[in-house]
Length: 107
Image (cartoon, rainbow, N blue to C red; front, side, top):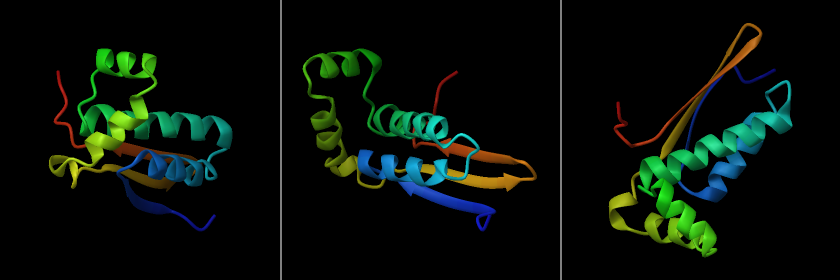
């Protein structure tokens, strides 16, 4: 394996899918890893960076407008520099992946 450590950042849904696909190749079960990673990355984009709430998302999905809303919010100037960051480190027989967004979080 050539990759021991890496830092990545994504901003869009397309970038999230691409990064999840790439990082999943490092895992023992790539299909499961890809699914989990894309969910975490997209969660960071939509909720952490763009402020799409749970109920907002449910309504957008029901109206088949979720992707359009994400794209519209990504185009806003206040979101231009918001990224989801992923760090990857191989530790002996484990792969440690950390994902963080721009949201300060909550208690």
